[in-house]
Image (cartoon, rainbow, N blue to C red):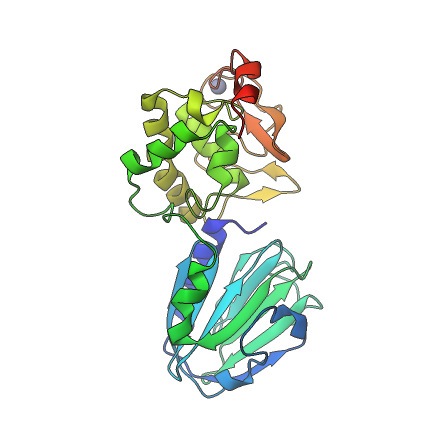
Length: 295
Ligand SMILES: [Zn+2]
């Protein structure tokens, strides 16, 4: 699933290769992608110039010069691939279609053609992604409906976020996945944050010491930054292909911990496959206590 670093990579590609260009043609072959969209067609964008590519959590927000904005969520399997006029090709998001496949692929649903011949394709194998076209003045209200917490890539208020830990008896991993706590942390990056913090993912959030809570919160921006620097963690068929020891645990069950050499384990926390080092992240002593406090 495209996580925040993949979405941010797509945003950067769009910013570099599409902003400032005029959209001359757009075709959407899968109308259901316009789920809950105030405007159900993309054709009102034809003739407009892309002014900006922003992001809130995993929602891309493209602003055009005709007063309209396009929100895009890649969900489980969305992918944006750009063929820049004159050669360069960049893609971000789900790894299917592969970059060396022919485009448009059968999973390509939307084609955007710009005035200089640059083309962007939106592909989505599973078709859970969505696009919403609306007046730019309505975008902030539309984004507010998601109740996203602060951006995990930005500066985090340790004191404010620490208070949330003391109120929640749920596993710390479950808390970190809650987008109203911090926006943008998905399964891979939560596992990495907890490994760096030396905290077992099943620990009840309210059982952690203030120092552990601070360590966890402070690990969030650098972990996401590492993911963004790599254009998204390289995980193929659930196996990680770490670069610079990242990812350190996610997708590495059975492989040695980069810190202590112990085999990485895979467990379930909530419903989510969760990777950890059993030595660097000691398990909770009393699981009974965390269950009694569960909210
Ligand atoms: Zn270890």
